[in-house]
Length: 451
Image (cartoon, rainbow, N blue to C red; front, side, top):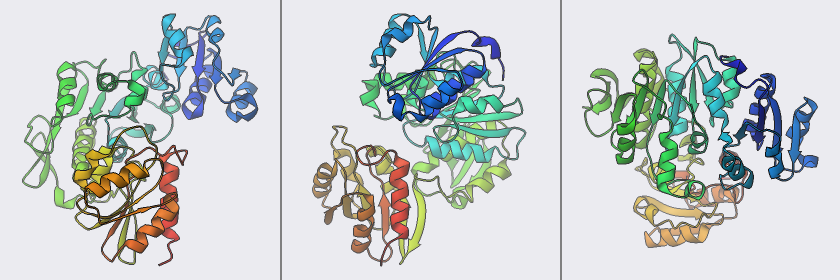
């Protein structure tokens, strides 16, 4: 690690645990900081807090007392999910105390250069592709962020011979000040997480922080087909690498005559790419731009794209059973992601959708339901989704309790050649702790189907 002495002796409050908070607290404690941890979960139930206390770290659980800031706190490291409306966060900012997320620590401490990837959709797929494409190159790729190990934990073992491939959310990026990736990637910008950011403008501002500290020695890989992303690119000081699925961009990555090119060098024929869905073409273009910039080889990229069939819970092919194709797209936690999943298929689709009600309607989904022969819906939004499906003339609409019984209902409605797709268009938190739990239930239910 570099800059090890930056945090030595500093009074630092880690707000919120989970994986990122625990990793940040342990790292800062190891670096000699005077760490206090505050978490909403009561001490009696808080295994993580007890373990940290055993290591000599001060813990305060069950509430967020403002008096914690009276202990000469110089920095707050916040769990990304904690909103800025939190009283302790607001008070820290009022006192001009910096509030950051753990990716700020990663940038400050890592000896390895960072490729940071963000966007409203496609982050995980693109991050995975970049990680795989960089294998067998001059740098050893380490995957981090929402997709894998907490990034500041990865920074502890990263060397100059490594490169950290980091999936970064808007929540994480908003809590950055000096975050400085060598390569940043912005895939797209749509309405998302407005309940957290308040406005679309604030959401875009958070995403734009991925390139805020870059210079001409760095690279910004961006979607030249997205108007909002273009605006971010115009303000970036980095060397620009555009990608486009619709037109030729000779200084970037593009599709022409059925092949993908990087700065006029042919990389691969689209016919050899096995990852399904037109929306994944943009993810592939972005991954090629980032990985080739950091030293990936064309043969390795060709190998990855001809064998990589999807990330778990992201339009993941599960199995073929009784000539039905099952796909797990539990990560589709918003309407746009579900639309793109539906548009990936030409076969008749039986859609499993529903989940947390964030107050929005689903009218935007209607135009993508033409190929849907049946909807099986569940969760808080089931009535809204049924209404949208009815307006789109979906022939059959059924209600389920959870994903498990939705799978059997979908199978009973299906015929040979159909696609049975879990693409909820909603967050999972009304019935599941995570979208991964929801997706895992789908996979297990598919395996248990009684034909």
